[in-house]
Length: 368
Image (cartoon, rainbow, N blue to C red):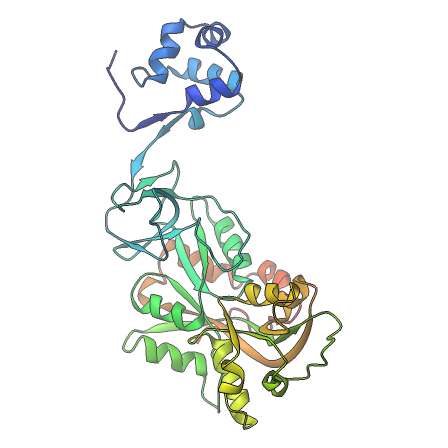
């Protein structure tokens, strides 16, 4: 009998105790000696298939949960998009060219209440990266952007091919392109605003990724505006009211497309920006702005119609913008990116997007 089985994590003791069983009682139920249970829990012995199946049946779990292979993450430099300073952090992982990118899943994400399963874990010193069974960062893809519907794209893409996971991380348009330019993501969702006839999204891609051939895939057209309390008790009509000294405003940070839109609209109406930004409560996401309004911590916030409705708020439209996905051409053959491009052509995704308030999918999937 081998003295140990390095790389195999045994959770037998945990699940035995959860069932309130002693080693002797469990041994009797699966027809082995108590010493065999002790050796399994101490890592000295791995059971044969028949014993492993009986253990799983008695303990109400799967064999893979009781005995899992702990594999080191794929080789390559680790780039963390966020803070993983705690002793143990859960990560979503994706390999972008030769860089392993990790997204800490337990950090504050601007009022995202979603809990997601991880691909692996990392220690606080960033040295001990461990993949969970079945995780394959080589197949995963990473999408950055601020459209809440990217979560739908994520799920449709993840279902497209076995073993593939798409991860969507919230980021402003500016940050999404910056990370893409640094080679730390596969896709950047962007919605810059055109001052004239030029395609603002394509112009931004060329500015952030000069000399890097990219494709731009249409995702949706969506309504942007002001989110206000239900019934609009303060009678807010547009950006001109944001200059009112009694009005509390929650807006986005520099680099966010909605901040640029607001600045352009203020300039158009000859309103000095410091009359608004001087009293600005800065928020990191559409949801955080809506939360401030819903909790009466702000009277208005910039955001999307779909977010306003989800918080029970009224919405004052300011613009309709094109939300596009920027993808470098050299990674379009990646299996995850290829799956995403196929999903963007599917009627299933279009129908789901079309059901959202403020969304137009007439151009979804068009490539430029």
